[in-house]
Length: 451
Image 1 (spheres, rainbow, N blue to C red):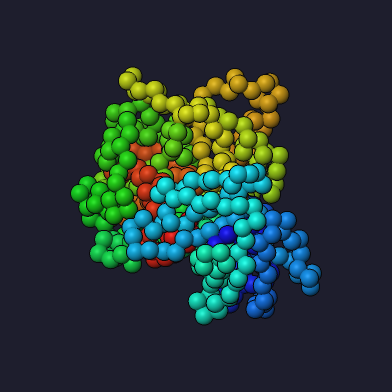
Image 2: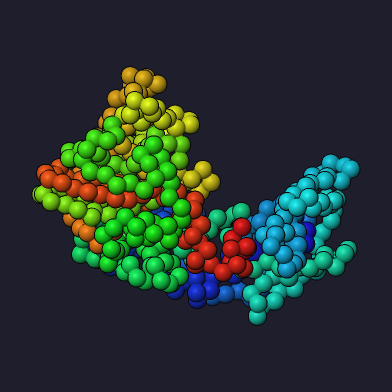
């Protein structure tokens, strides 16, 4: 199908399923609320009756509003043609977008699988039929009889104007929290995770929503803990090794290998891509102290933006150089060498990553004296929020209870301790974790439709 501009009534995208929950309101107790952090300006449609009517246009000039004045969904002036799905492992590549221009001769655009389309500016789809039962729009191109199908969710997800936050996608659902999470921390059972896909899916769902999750009933051994990590994906190897097994022996030039207090931080700020997940299992401890700390960085960022928008903007825009050079044979720096503490998606401007470790920060000599002052003022406010007792979740790790957390969201720390403390664990890659999260919660058709 070729459509140079598609316009649909906004209300058509609503259904009872879409409005069954409000993921943008406070929910329940312990200060948790469901939110896509610092909502990025995408439209959230209020409940409304479904319109059974719709309007398409194939003309290049498009339309601005419906005759009855209702708001419209705009899919722009770029023609679309969706190929019929075929039984092939490469079906995901069969949905392509073809651009045309007003220039002559006809503009040729190449896409995946070396498939080509030649279109002239006046090539229009002129026959449309709405298929209600399958919740699809079917469009037939008059010149060649080709039929294309666009489902409701695809049209909604790919609207140009307005933009919609897809709260139905599980990876967009976040539950932010503060210190009161201690009353109901997310947890799953080891046997469920290891023996069933449903248990694994539930574990990843909790990690995604809360940013961390405990696994209870894990045998306190290296073998079983490593197998648990590999249920998600392969283990990421760094200059600290692959699967860690360490005590406070200063094996590496890093404060983690001491018995000192560690303030809330994220790991791997010196990597171009910090590890996505981090797993801890305390299998031996003969001493006192050493309580673990978690802080929800997205919650703290939200608090900072409400209290000091200027500071939030500073920490979102000022790049901070980072490095790891504690070992004599190591100098790790990211490319580019500096990133902000608060990192936002360039497309929808939502906060997606916290990169903060004051011990890994390099000199800030790329800033002017005025910028340095502004940065440190913002950093002080950020640190005040991080260390606010109302935002800190303290607990004691113990053998048999594994902690896994989102290193792009949740900051972690530790109290000083005395005695022998043996910790094992691993880093896991972000993209591989997110892939497993998605394939466990979407069927193949839903995956293809999301692309």
